[in-house]
Length: 82
Image (cartoon, rainbow, N blue to C red; front, side, top):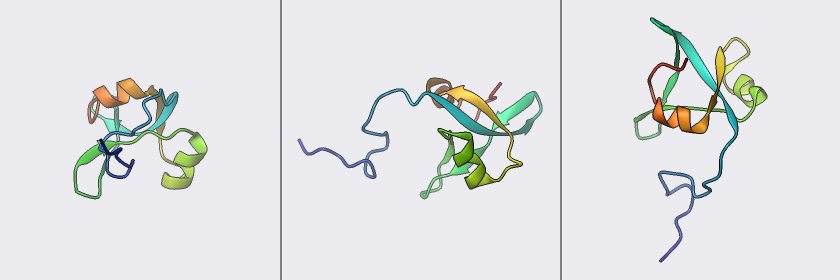
């Protein structure tokens, strides 16, 4: 069986915990909610960064964020990120 390259696989091939993620959020009716982005094919997805620096470089210093574990981010795609 041929091994899929990470770019072809819908899930990363490396299945190890990412550690705490820094998730961009926006104000919502019940507090804050994960900020959603679009993939190249147009699907909506939540994004988690592995450092505050990478989040700030990408989205700017004014972007609000919360710490969240990878499993919680996967379960709460688009839901409240409290």
